[in-house]
Length: 480
Image (cartoon, rainbow, N blue to C red; front, side):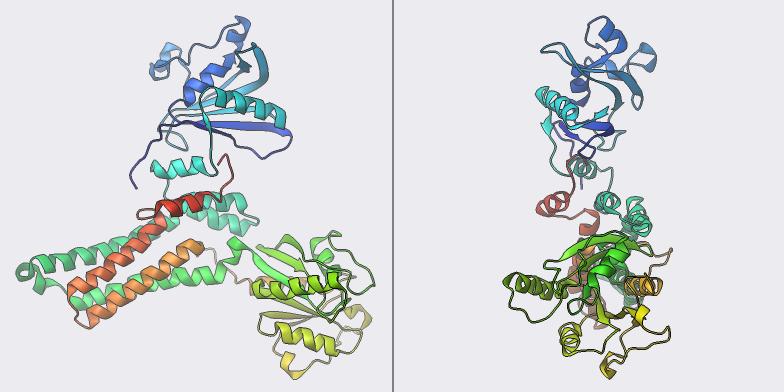
């Protein structure tokens, strides 16, 4: 993707809303330095009641010894509104000259006191001086368009922001350092080498045609390219939960202790617990960290027959959420025999990955084993007591195992967009390998090879469509 330096200057608040010790307004674009200079006053300028004049055109590019402000230095001063000579806040200003900035454009960052009023006032002043409000992800989008990062690194920025566990952060860090980019570029070089060789055989059949080794090409495609594509796809399947979160749902008939278990795992009273069946009417969802895996835990309405219209709505939501669950914690009450209601719940979730929880085990001997149907024997069983937090370590181990462990050496985990592109590339490479083995004309082989390269190029942003770029960066927050 060629560099595309923007003609507009954008600005946004780059820190989360709310009060805090510091808030940052970021400005990027050709007029960033001029705009910052128009509203910033140094201590000397404030004492002299004059606007700082070091921001005039060209002064940034003077020799460092001339007294001009330097890139990547902090300067103390105040933000002032010339309209009424009003000081808005005491700040620190950082300037970053192009191309040595996040966006490869001129960037100014104003570090002010954090608070909605003060940050909004400074941002409005910046916009009044000629900047436009940044769109979601526009700073990172400019970093990509200006060639500072590739598309996998841009997506990793969002993954770092959204990371909920150390393992999730480890994966995102591997991406942002360019690990996925290097891997994809290596695969494209392998394909390009074959494509160059076969195109030479097409253009100069008498000189190059006999030198093309079909067996060697087939070996490279099969044992190098196809194998690595399959490895990346299996990594997505095995460890996507580290990025997306493992959707875990607690299911069972009413009053078996589902809400108590959720409160116990969260270590807080998130769900209402009463002895009255049907207390939970809606789906309650929270995110927690279990053995390094981000888990999206849902407490649901008990599955049973009901005439209560509100309760019926909750049960319907439960049934719909079953399809989206990666893992279901199927809870029964071990203090009483299984009932037809338990059997009915099992029938509705038997097609999913399950862990069977025998709750209220504190009312039974330690070696107690519930009397369960033979069809349930293959389901992992844990005796727990949500009341006394018994058996939770075993439960957490099983949840982490269901999430699919990831080894430290395997940190390149594609996201869903990348996975789909990898699948298209694999399909095209497999077709090319079949064509080579069948001694098909190189013209047909090259069509598949080019399609495979385009799909890989889409991952790192070489062949990506503009509408896809908009979709990717729309998921970012404003200010990043």
